Structures are given as structure tokens and as C-alpha cells.
Image (cartoon, rainbow, N blue to C red; front, side, top):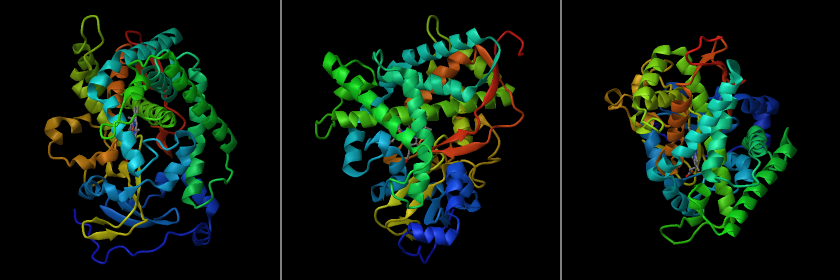
Amino acid sequence: MQYDSAAGLPVGAGPGLRDIVSEAAGFPRLIRTIVRNLIEAWPAEVYREGLVEARFIGRRTVFVSDPVLIRSLLVDQAALLGREEFLTRSLSPVLGKGILTSDGERWRHQRRIATPVFRHDRIRAFVPAMRAVATETRTRWAAKGPAQVDMLSEMMRTTFDIIVATMMSGESGLETARFGRAMNTYLDQATWKMALSLLGAPAWTPHPGSVRGAAAARYLRGTISRAIASRRASGRCGDDLLGLMLQAHDPETGEGMPDASLVDNLLTFIAAGHETTAIVLAWTFWLLSEHPEVEARVLTEIGAACQPGQGPNLEALTYTRQVVMEVMRLYPPAPLIVRKTLSEVRLGSTRIPAGRSVHVPVYAVHRHARLWAQPERFDPGRFDPARSAGRDRYAYLPFGAGPRVCIGMNFALTECLAILAELLPAFRAVRAAPSRPETRFKVTLRPHGGVTMTLSPRGQPAP
Ligand code: HEM
């Protein structure tokens, strides 16, 4: 694709709050759009073109949908990019300056320490804990009998319990349910912080849920601080995520992570890790129920991968993995990657000045008319190695790309397979509504109103 602008993009300061209000004559309208669903405000060209410059939520924004330019931006020129303030401002009250919300040397130092913790062999060691939590979900479902459930809530509970079990195994004093509710309370109101920050309003501006959000942030940070202190006091490290992080060192400087950064990062792993994975799983159950032939193939594969006395060999679930990848193409839980240029960036022959917002609209790239045949169609065969061989790596970005690629990618994929392998053979989930749930951008891309499905144990007729 060629999307060159010989003249380059004009250089100019971003608008202030007053400009935006007069320009759009509609602060309430803008804020409604952001809080309702930011994606609806994207220009239609992002689904058809490679490089689009538009005024978006009152500020000049560059959208990059061309895989070649995405690589150039996120990989080759990554050092020229920083975090957008709206992301850090909405998440920092709870995540501090952890890996997700920091930049520069502070980010590099933390990323170097945490990267080995997410190595393949470490993740493999977490599989029994993942399976044990999935078994609890299966037992809970069995106790319900045939029942209607919100699959999103079911999966949120399962992935939350998994992240807590793998991070702080056996930590006494952690009230899991209360902790989960506080995390959701915080994330639910974070979209308001994002909206106000995008519109240039000061950080202290009150908004719906702000008092509850602040209380939730205090509770979450206090709880994790106490868990770290008690682990240190016990003199044991343990081989869960907390233990591994306590022992980890920066390979360049030899320094470990101070407790304040540990709090930031453990909360980051919980926030970044559980809802995203739950969304993928909820959509997987839904799409399998729409496509019984795909579901049958997945069940056969899981059956064939079973090992005596253990769960299925997850490495053998190649088709199931393709299904999960296709689910994330259609419904990427992180539908937007945002950056701010710290200095001039070049995309092809287009120059983008310092201080500009640059967005990679992942949801649109995954449905781009020039990149995917019949983009709206659910077709796990797209990820068959034979069919995907010629595809540009940067046409598919559910976990981002470049140095800031998701650190938990293998954790999430392994977790999805472990949960599906445990639950799918035991239960049939049938969609309980005629059409797919709508999606809404709420930091992640959530199915709006949940994912209502009817569960019945396999071998029994659906109710
Ligand atoms: C299906 C599940 C998941 C999806 C779709 C997902 C997606 C993403 C994406 C797109 C990014 C890059 C954001 C950017 O470039 O601005 C990211 C970053 C990150 N993710 Fe994930 N993630 C998932 C699961 C997890 C899990 C399980 C963890 C941890 C246990 C995790 C921890 C992180 C962290 C710490 C970052 C920041 C990395 C950095 O900036 O260096 N994620 N994730």
C-alpha cells in the first residue's frame, strides 16, 4: 500500500479545552461518545486506507492501518514514541508507574526485570494452577444444573481467580471477591478519566464514580502492599508470580524491583491480564455456539490430546489455538494502541511532528477490507500455517507489537487453552439471544450487556 503525503502533515499545537468546546460546540456530545464507545468516532477510512489524519475528539490524530507503516511505527521508531496522557491519567491512580503506564528508562528497567518471569517454561509451570481454577468453575456449573449464565461474568471470575492463584498462591488475608469487585469498580469509571483527559480537563475534575474509584484504588494498593510485606516477612519467596518478581533482577544493572514498583506491576498484571482474557473466552463460547462444525472439531482435538492422569497436552491443541486467534481478530480485547510522538516520526514519506497522537486502530486493522478476505466472517482456518504464510505479521496485533508487545501473551494463550480444554468437553453453551452482543470500548472492548448463554452438561439435551 502507498499512502504518501508529499507535503507532510502540518505542524501545530494541539487544541486546548476552550478550542475544543467552541469547535465542536458540544462538550457533552464528545464526552458521551467517548464514554459510550470511542470506536464509533473513528473515521470510516481507517477500515479502507493505510494512513489517515483526522480531527478526532477535538485533536489532530494520525491513524495507522497499513501493516508496513505499523511495523515502521511500533518497531523501528518505537524509541521516538511515548505513552498518551489519557491512558496514564486514567490508569495511574491504581497502577502507579508500572510497566504499562511508564515510559523511558523507568519502563525499560521494569520490563527487563519482568520479562524472564513470563518465560515459556515458567508459564508451563502455572498450568496446574490454571487447571485447578477451571475445575472449580466446572464444579460450580455442575452444581447449577442446566442454567442461563452471563458467560462474561463467569470467565471474569475464572480468569481473576487464576491470576490471583498464579500470582499469590495461598496468600492468606486476600479477600478475592472483594478485591475483584474493587478492581472492576476502578476500571468501570476509568473511561471517564480517559474522556476528561482527552478533552483537556484537569485531573481533579469530578466525574461519575470518581469517589468510589479513588476508594477502590486505595484499597487495591493497600491490599497488595500488605501481601508483599507479609511475603517478605515470611522469609520465603515461592515460585508464583510474586515470588518470581521478588527474586528477579535487571540483567543490566543487577538491581531488583523496589516494593512500590512491585505493587504497581502486580496490580498491572491483574488489571491487564484478567478482563482481556475473560473477554476472549466469552466470545469463544459464543462463536463456537454459532459454528457447531468448528466446535465439533475443537472437541475432537481436545479428546485426542488427553493424556492419562493429566489434562490434555495444550501444545497439541493447534486448531483450538487457531480458533482463539480468530476470536481475537474479530474481537480484540485491546482494540486500540495509542502513542504520542516524542520527536518527528516518518511513516513512508509522511512526516509526523513531535507531540502528535498516533493511533493504531487494531479493531479496524483486523477487519480491514484490503487485508482480510470477507473480514466479518468467523473462519479459524485463516490461521492455518498454510493459509497465513503470506500474511504480514503486522496485519494481526491482538497483543500489540514491538518492544511494548504484551508481556503476558503466552500466559493468556495458555490460560485460554487450559480453560477451554477443561470446560468445553463437560458443558455445552448455547447462545441465549438471537444476535451477537454489541461491543463497547471501556478501556478494553467489552461485549455490552454481557454474553448470555444457556449451559447444559454434555450428554444431556439442552433445556
Ligand atoms: C487475551 C489477553 C490479553 C490481551 C489481548 C492483551 C493485549 C495487550 C496489548 C495490545 C498490549 C500492548 C499495548 C500497547 O502497545 O500500548 C499489552 C500490554 C501489556 N500487557 Fe497484555 N494482553 C492480554 C493479557 C495479558 C496478561 C495475562 C498480562 C499479565 C499477566 C498482561 C500484561 C501486560 C502488560 C504488563 C503490558 C504492558 C507492556 C509494556 O508496555 O511493556 N497482558 N497487552
